[in-house]
Image (tube, rainbow, N blue to C red; front, side, top):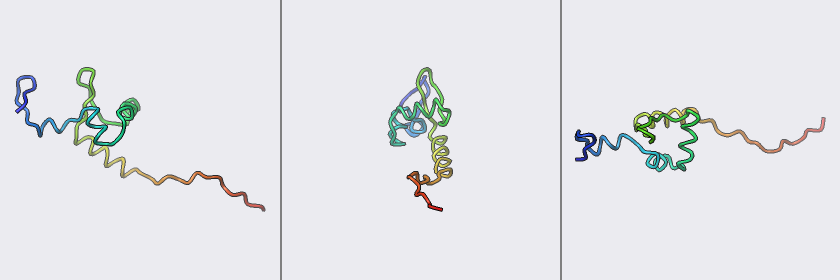
Length: 84
């Protein structure tokens, strides 16, 4: 068992918190994307000193809201001219 500040902590409890690196691997995005989403206030996270941490349950909820709000992209090609 690992200890943090003198209190025992299981691996399961530590797995409930992501670091930037772990979250970027989980979401399959570059760490810069994580920082950009944080700066925009679009990603739930908290700071421990100067480091960001992310609660797994909050991230999973955020992922569900992202999927629920997804709309297929609108085609953005050149429109044909209609001769009237």
